[in-house]
Amino acid sequence: MPDFLSKAKRSALMATIRSRGNRDTEIALACFFKRHGITGWRRQADLFGKPDFAFRARRVAVFVDGCFWHGCPMHGTQPRQNRRFWLRKLNGNRARDRRVNRALRAKGWRVVRIWEHAVSKRNEARLVKRLRAALAGAP
Image (tube, rainbow, N blue to C red; front, top):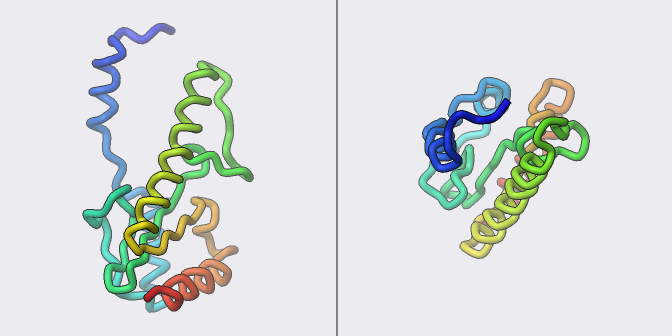
């Protein structure tokens, strides 16, 4: 079915949609931090790339990447419809993630990227170990 909006109008409309408070990712990770006594984090920090969580005193930025939107090698899928659009979109998301990582690291931040599927009870021990190591290794 063809889009009834022009490309510019569709882009403007999509830009108004903001992702906040995704229960499966960011809120679950906030609960995880509280459950394990991991403190010092803030959400919606005013940093380049808009990390989901920032530990300013430790200069650690944490991103929770959705398996679909960031191309998880285990769970990422390719839509069958409009394949060229989605390939360009998902590759662009991964390229943006790399740019954000480089820019934050150049400013002295440690970047931690967590896949959406890693925020689960089954992966909890591994995730807490990884986060504590990142926070301990920070200046």
